[in-house]
Length: 82
Image (cartoon, rainbow, N blue to C red; front, side, top):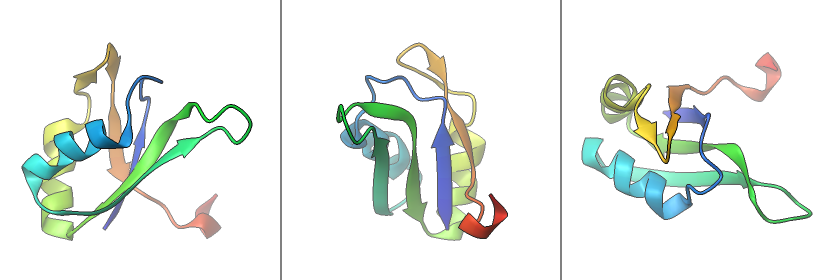
C-alpha cells in the first residue's frame, strides 16, 4: 500500500521517515519529494508498505508532531485521481 505523507517539516529526511514507519512493519520504499532546482524537501513524500502495516502506521502516525509539524498520513490516491 502506498501512503501519502504531507505537512512535513523541511528538516525531515528519508531516513527519518524510515525510522518512524519501520516501527509498524517492513518498509518497501520511501520517496521524499524534493524541489528540482534547490534539492530541498517540498514537505511531502510517499512510503510503501504492506496494507496491514500501513493501516497501523496511519493510526499511529497521523497527527504525530515531527520536527514541530503535525504529520498527515493517508492512503495515496492514484495519479488519475488528481
